[in-house]
Structures are given as C-alpha cells and as structure tokens.
Length: 419
Image 1: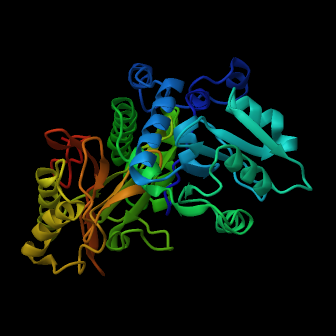
Image 2: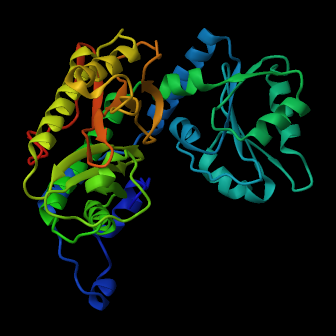
C-alpha cells in the first residue's frame, strides 16, 4: 500500500471481523489468527464510545471560544468536525446537509426534505428544517439566522466547507459577516480529553502489536504491497480498519515513497508508516528496520534520528511555541551533519492527530502557537539520503501538564523496533 487508508469504524462495525456467523464459518476455511483471543479481548475491552454528554460538553466549549473570539455561530457541513460535536455521520453531495451552532442556543439543522427521516434519526430532538428539491437550502439557512437575530452577526465557517456553499451563503445572505471557524473547531478538537487520549492510546497499542508481528514475516523477495496487505489483515484481527505505507530500500529515501512497487532484498531498509482507527481516533506510527545486517551508516543515521525524536520530547511542554519543538529535533540532525534546514530532514516535525490522521495544529518552523496540555502531535524526524535509504521514527507525542511523553515505548535499535 503506497498510501495509508485509515478506515473509521464504529465499535459495532469493527467487531464484525471477530465474530463471523456460524453459517459463514461452515462455508469458508477458518483464518489462522496471529494474535490470541485473550490479547484481542484485553485490548478491545478498553474501548468505550464517546457519549452524548461528552459531545454536549464539546458544544459548550465551542460556545465559550465563540464568545472569546466574537463569533456568533459556526456553520458545519457533514464531516469530521460535525461528527466531533454531534456524533452525526453524513456524507457530502450536491444536496446540502448542514448544522448551525449558535453561541446562544441549541444546534439547528438543515436537510433535504426526502432525507428527513434519516436526518431525524441522527439529530434527535434538535430542530430540523428541510428544503424541497425546487427550493434553496440557503433560504432555510437565512431563516435560521433571522430567527436567532444573526442576519447581521458573524458566522464562522468550518474550514472544510466547500467553496460553492460558502459562496452561496455570501451571495444569498449578504448581511452576515463570514469568518474562519477554525479557531473554534480546531481550538476544541486539538485539546484532547482523557477519554480521547485513551482511544488514541488503544489505537497505538494495537499498532505496536501489529508491527511487532509483521516484521517477523519479512523475507527476501517480498513486495511492498505484500507487506502492506499483511499489515491490513493483522489490523483486521483486532476488528479495526488500518493500514500502512511500506517502503523498501531506496524507496525509503522518499518520505511518501514512489509509484514503483519495490521488492525486498537482504540488507534493505524497511520503513513502515501507518496505523488504525478506534472509535474514529487515529494512530500514526513509523518504525524503520532492516532485513538482515545493517551497515554502519544505517546504524549511525538511525541513532541520530532517535536522538532528534527524544530532543523534541524533552523540549515540548505547555506554553512552548510549536516551532521550538521542531527546532529541537532539527538542530540535532543538522549538528550531526545532515543539515541545514530541510536538506535531509525534508518535512516538518509533526502534525496534530485525533479524529483525522493529520489535523490542526503543526510542529513546524514559523508556528508561534503555544502548546497546551492535551495536545497530541506526531513526533517524526527523519533523514532521507537519495539513492541510498531513508530512516524515520514516528510516535504520538502527548503534551501533559508537566511536559510531554511518547504514547508508545521507543525503539531500542534498528533491529528492535520497540523497547
């Protein structure tokens, strides 16, 4: 697999691979499991869905941020942020489904009339207005704004809202002031609750088990696609969707690989970058190892990258600008001879992670945003030597009240990918 595909599954849906019907098991050969039932159950028993009360608390936090920022309401289409605040899963099409979350008042929804029953199932007791096929949903949005005295107010637009939607709101409701809703949505989503942190931890724990098993299956002549398929099957044993970007040999010198499917040979670097989704919360873990005997240069580069990752953890804590965490790791690499700047460490140090594999905010040069307890980032320094190999180590970095920590045991060596 040359691109990670994190499949977001509900707890109920994700149990399906574990408990096939007896009729199915009689007609298909039994799959040989790589993990014991006890190990799978021990991890799955920790999974608890996000509750309605938690989502209401998130809406309250959003209202607080709106008050601080001078925003009167936030507009959402279907998508990750809508699901974060409401639990509603709604795909996007040319027919608009949307929510308006006022600073003062309850969420209100707009849906196509012929989808009313399906929408009502999800919005519950919240107000739901519908529009017929020959009507404009933007007239319905205008009605909501008018009834809430917001026609001349400030409306935050959730950042992934499609341009044609924002454009129609601007043209058909010209009196409302449109601003970015990102300070509200990302302001809430970037600070994880203890429950969210536990779900991310579970996703990381599953990823560690999968990686430890997968590397035992490496063999000469294996293709990147073959290992990618193996990883996906191992994730499925835990009842979660997951996968990984797999890079062998020279391909590992390109952070996201190449189109060609490389075959593994003795002495090749093996880079695995991926994870899974637990109740929608993602893991993103990279381990680099080798098939057979590594060269001295490979060992030296691996040690530099490991020190860079540790340097970032040491610096990270509440109140520190994000760019200082990037700089701590980048300086280690540059001082070891693999600088300056992005010459060999070609990307930012990290990205936020939660309901999406990459989300606000970022550990990158130029970001003055101060870290806050509850932030979760990838910590993924790398050195990429074109024509030879690349080495990257990636773990989730959790900012705590007193500093920061990685959410998985760090690797011990190029050959031993977890302590």
